[in-house]
Length: 76
Image (tube, rainbow, N blue to C red; front, top):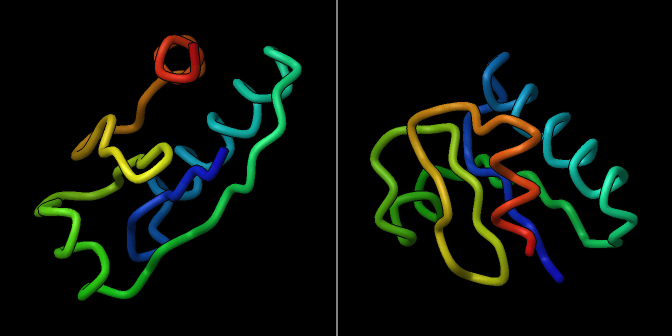
């Protein structure tokens, strides 16, 4: 599983990454978590507001910091 956190590295992006890692730990799942900061790559996903979370190439959430519980649901 590959999870991408899209964003410029702002505090909300960092919080989304932390929430993602916590959700993975809570579920006992392993995944590659990658930060994507290049605006061209973010736009390629059709995302216009960050932070965003992409799981295995599919945009699951953007424009908000998904909670640990929301991310757990995305991972099921």
